[in-house]
Image 1 (spheres, one colour):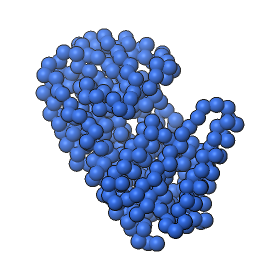
Image 2 (cartoon, rainbow, N blue to C red):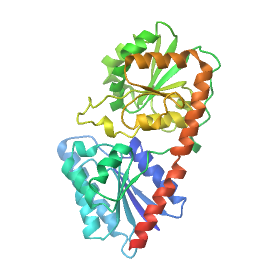
Image 3 (cartoon, helix red, strand yellow):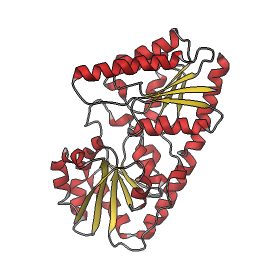
Length: 359
């Protein structure tokens, strides 16, 4: 059973790694032969980048042509590169020239910025995999064959969290991507107020280099007035388990449609929260979008609607190590029950097998 997975980025891209590479690796343990074709972005002029996209497109067409006798299922994670129109052409060629079955995986509201291309891909795909409930609801209006599979974690990669027995040097952590650092603006006032009562460290792990952090210098300067110690740590895939292990509380603030407009955040899939929970860290998150469905408030994390919520609920965890421990254990249980890659991959395996039997 053959599967060709095309990812929208390389291994360093979180969505490509988690919903592309990790999915492929899990399926390869389920009697599938998996080939992964990443998109490796480059910097340069528009002409240089356009030529790169065109060459990449041709190479991927050749990859499809390399299987003539067998017909692998085509699995597209977001797109085959950074240009949705090229991904649409690719789907059309796969479907109508090579007669391949196409699975399309979506974990963001890409249709908000490229409605024609993404909606067309959704309509043409044999199966759509949606990463969250709002995405599922949207996709079902376009394609009747939609499967909800949340962004899932390989729990074997997560080390046991070492709970602190005291409130000395409690670490609030924010682990994400450079583009999500701006969400921390929501916490400026609550963190500043908390610093009057508690001694905590704010650790931000969201960029690979110091240069990437420089883009948010103004915000980071403001955050440094909110805690006695603010750390910016380079993100590393290899070191992520250790990074998470050293955190006590996970932060997941989220705007309500105020970043890209048109409810972009509404369609985000909440992996930041899932990541904390898998590591046994109690998450404190904005009660918006998928995050509000992942966390059971007060059991495996806290949900916040406003600044007062953030202050009160972080206060509870900052002053009560036992509450942090219990909530962290419950968070891990939730990850094991609902967001385990091995469990959710069984759903995907079943749907691929159904596609193969359809001929």
